[in-house]
Length: 114
Length: 114
Image (cartoon, rainbow over all chains, first blue to last red; front, side):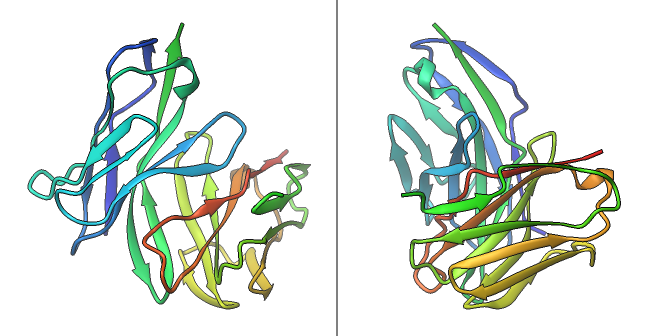
């Protein structure tokens, strides 16, 4: 079945450091790809998405490019802030009968120190 | 005004008891979901309803019974609670017919079974 693998956490960085969180996927067909973020004590919220190969999703300084040849969707940010501390989930979608079945990676906890 | 709201936020109960978690969305979406997040942050889909019809049921034990009285509500009832049911349960919604993968999540309901 479809699956998503993210780099193991936790990841700890200093403010203004460069961030990369790796994500690779296995899927039949061409799924849409997503990054969701979960801030402490909150539900998940969509950070960015890409719906086809070579698309780049971006939001709040974060970027990720849909790479079909390497089946990857790595999350990057040039200069992280303390407020970026959260758990980040990579996901792919499998649409069935009007419902979006999101398959999530295991999540990567990111902590940014001032 | 909370888009996807779940109650209760915290639930502590004994093994063998029966409990329910309620979810309501005011986004006008036609599809709702229950996800389970375990202690290691793994997120897995349990159920999805589209227009009150069950369309995704991911090999969840029969002790779990979702009920959707209307498009805006999806409740989760759990019978004979077990220790392994301890987790955070997230409700989510989406507009099934046009959606490209964005789900809107509630804040989660943390269930602790003693």
